[in-house]
Image (cartoon, rainbow, N blue to C red; front, side, top):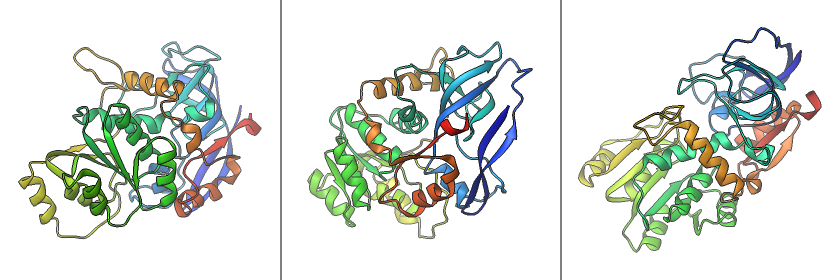
Length: 337
C-alpha cells in the first residue's frame, strides 16, 4: 500500500515523500496504523529539523505523536482492528510499526473513541510533562515556578495547579503568557527581570520547586537562583545547545541551599505497570487521557492550526522563528488515505 511521509532532507529543508508499505506477514508485535493526525514536536523535532542537536545525518524521518486507526496487527498487540490508537510513529499516512516493551521503544496504545483525534496528538507531550511532575516531591500549597511556556511548559504548569500548588509560569514571549492565563495559570510572567517578579509574588521567599522546560543552560541557572533552601530543581527540558559560563556560582547555590536537582528525561519509568512501582507509561497515559476527557487541560486552545503535510517546511519555520504566533501545528492526513 502507498504511504506518504514527512522527510527532513537538510537543515531547514523538508518535504513529503512516498513509499510502498507491506501490510502482510506482520510480526507478533507489529501493527499498521492509518494516520488521522500527527503533531509536530516543537522541541525534539525542531532540534533535528534545524540541527540544534548534533550527531545525526539527513534524511531523517521526524515525528512521534500520531493518532489513527489500527488496520492490521500481530497477535501481541492489545488493540483490535479498527480501534483508535495513539502511536509514537513518525509522520506518515500509513505506518508499519512495532509495539515494544523497552522504555525508549515504539509504543501503541488504544485510546477512547470520544477523545478528539486532533487533541489526542498532544498525549506524548503530556507524557513528557507528567514525568517531571511525578518525579518531584509535591505538597499542597507549594509554590512552583515553570520556566518556559511552550506546549509542555503550559501543560506542566496546569498539572501542578491541579495538585494544589501556586504556580508561577515564566516566558519572555507575552503571547505565551497570555495563553497560559487563559488556560487557568494565575501568575504568568513575561518580564525580563524574572527574579524581581518571583520575589514580589512570593514575598521574597522564592520557589519550592523550579522546573526548567526549555533545556537552556542559562534558564537552568535561573531556576537554581530562584529556588529556596531545601527546594527542588526539575530538569524537564533536554539541554542541547552550548553555553559558556562560570558554573561554580550555581554549584555553590546547590550546595549552600541544599537543593535537590532531578533529571526528568521522558520515559525513564517502566513502560508497563509492574509490582513495586507506582509509575509507568501505561498508567501515565491513562491519567493524561482522563485529563483530556475532563477538560482539566483544554488543549484545543493550544492548537495554532492544522495543515496539510505538504506544508511541512513552512510549519517547521513558523514553530522555529514565529514562536509568538505558532505553538502547536498538527498535520492532517485525510487527503492521503
